[in-house]
Length: 225
Image (cartoon, rainbow, N blue to C red; front, top):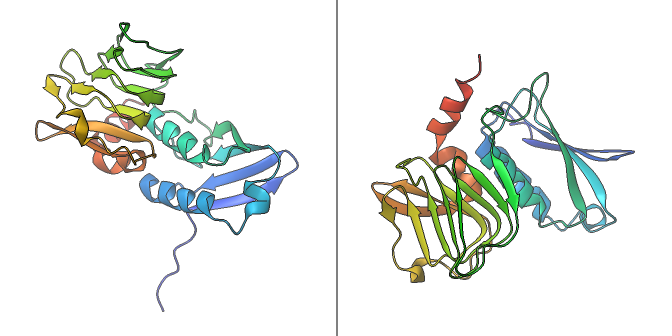
């Protein structure tokens, strides 16, 4: 008889809200896939569509990167009543490489404006047509990119560009410029990220990040003493 694979996501209710246990022995991409499936189910609508509930994400002995945290938050955004209040790892900070961090800004980059940054940046807002966001590291936008985004502006080819709505006029990573904007699928509503592969810019859904960029996870893990 075959071995039964235990659940990657376990949900428990408490007096304060809901606990989501994410199995630290499974690949994070597989856990994200299972989490997405469970959040999209309709047979638990009394929970998913009920009153506002606090959510705590327990990661076990796993630490996650900032892009992975953003991917989890994006999945939960489909259930407006489920509000993530905390991530927790056992005996350690839940985020990898906290000392270098990521700068978070909020606002809208309007037409004619240029937002430049050194390092990774998380923008809570939109980049409108005619606006530009440029960073020497990766760019994460919890909103829409409809203007120009340039990540890895000093030559970092491992940088990525991620957004809740990715419909840019142009993308650049390091010295590579995207194809014409008609390549971007207007029907796609999931968070996506752009990255370099074979000297071309490709786009994938956010939950594929750990599969496509496993080298980044390895480097971050090995920065810890």
